Image (tube, rainbow, N blue to C red; front, side, top):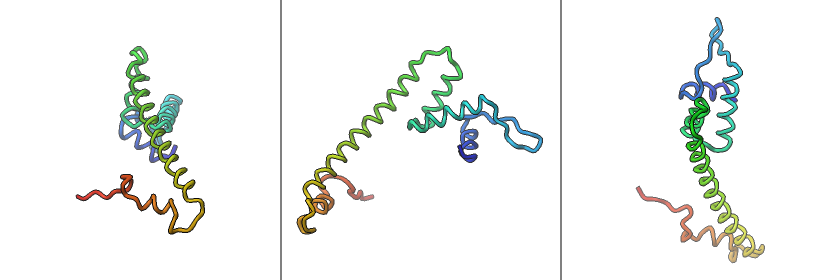
Length: 128
């Protein structure tokens, strides 16, 4: 993990400030390294900072019910499932475009025609 990222986690309270040497260098112990590993893994799974904060709070107080952790994980799972559905729809659309193109002329190119069709709602401009 990069130093600016670690310092950011310290600034926002996910990681307690470590003790410093006489030369003002930060010294992280095994607990801090484990906490950083937890944060890194949670970020890799796509949890946002507030979810990680809540999960760390639960980890710091292990006698609590894990209901909150379950709700956080289920919410993330729902987000992932929505993303998968969106990607599957995207794949289907791209497969259809490629299949219908059949390497013909640009005048009959289904890829170009589909991308030019603004009725699908993709890429519409919003007036402000």
